[in-house]
Image 1 (cartoon, one colour):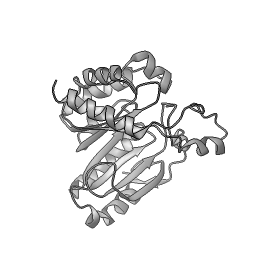
Image 2: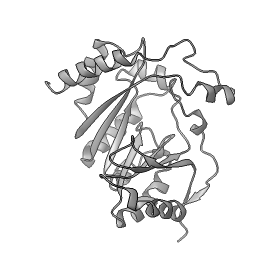
Image 3: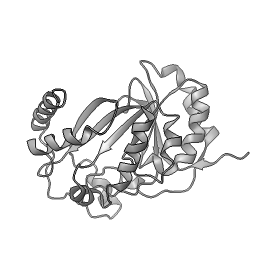
Image 4: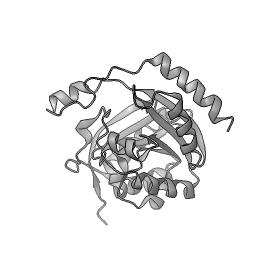
Length: 240
């Protein structure tokens, strides 16, 4: 049987931030969201299918000796859930090699979440906002799809790491911290929460692609304030 092919932008061979240990990070093309702080607009559109299941899995398996301290592979993007069939086929091979698999996602794909989560060890879930109106303002989409994903995620009992971008004037306040804590109560098996300060490092990509940069007038998030909010979050989150 001929296997499906995938569309990837690149593969980072020594990733240290997208899951435990040293990892291969596969950046897949395509995303339904148009987050105003996105720093990878070049991956919004799904391009030609440029790699086969065999090509990608063999590349990852060759790097297996470097996957120390619980390392492995992370499927990122873009939005990897838009290429779930391709990822599932890759995972079936990688699981036979006992390679740890993480999924870095915003939870907005085309369904079939139960199936893909069978093969995943860890989910890195990006929270855009906890409020329906603000979520749509930031992403251009409704929250329905991420709620569908969270439903499947909870059934799967997989480990979860949460990522939250902190944006000046939008969610850099105590009121939002309390809302986030309340929102995370309906997600099971959260092991870790990370706050990521908003930055404008992706701005040049927008200029090259002739796309208006949505946060032209925003400044980078103050890192010290972000750290203070994170400390407050941890104190309240683990005392709830």
